[in-house]
Each structure stands twice: as structure tokens, then as C-alpha cells.
Image (tube, rainbow, N blue to C red; front, side):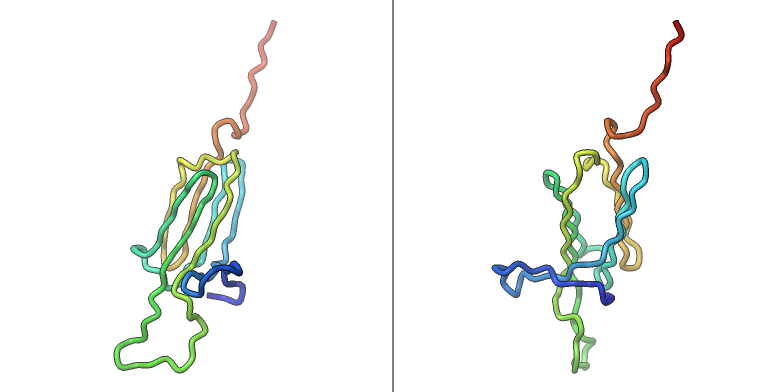
Length: 126
């Protein structure tokens, strides 16, 4: 976690549902977008990715338990989950999302839909 991690919170959200807002880099190229999300402390089996309609949701649970026999005297992170939601453009093909997770960094690749891909138009000679 770094100093750009925020807390996702709506006024009506109970404290038990609050989550950390992980920093995410979004890089676009001609073929689609790539998202890099920092999710330190999240094991792969506690990471959930979901696309519903045009919304992409990234959620991960953190294990905050102190090692046996130890007790925390100060904690900078006291929320047990990350959550980030994105609205996907109609130009992206949400059915072809690919994901990689390595050492706390999630990489998502979302290609552009075929209709949004650049294409070359052939010119006929008359």
C-alpha cells in the first residue's frame, strides 16, 4: 500500500463494508486497455474479478491477522478488503478480459471490440 491508496466509502455504507481503494494504472493502446492494480497482501484465492453489464469490479480480501504470539500495537491498514469498480466503454470487449496476478500486482487486459479496432480500407481500381 502507498500514500495514494484511499478508502472507498459512501455515506450510507456501514463500517463492515468499507474497503480500500487500490491504486490502478490504466494504459490504452490501439488494441485495447491494460490495467495494473496494486493489491498487496491479497492471496490469489481471495481475489475476485467480475464483469456485470458494463461494470468491472475488482475485490480482494487481506489477511490482517498478526502472527501467533504477537499483537499489533499500531496498524496503518485496518480494513480487510480492497474494492475498485470501473465502467467499461462500449468500445471494449468485456467477454475477452484476461488476467494475471503476480506478487500483489493484478494485470488485466481488455481488448477493443472488433467494431472499434482500426481497420484498413481497400481501394478498388476501376
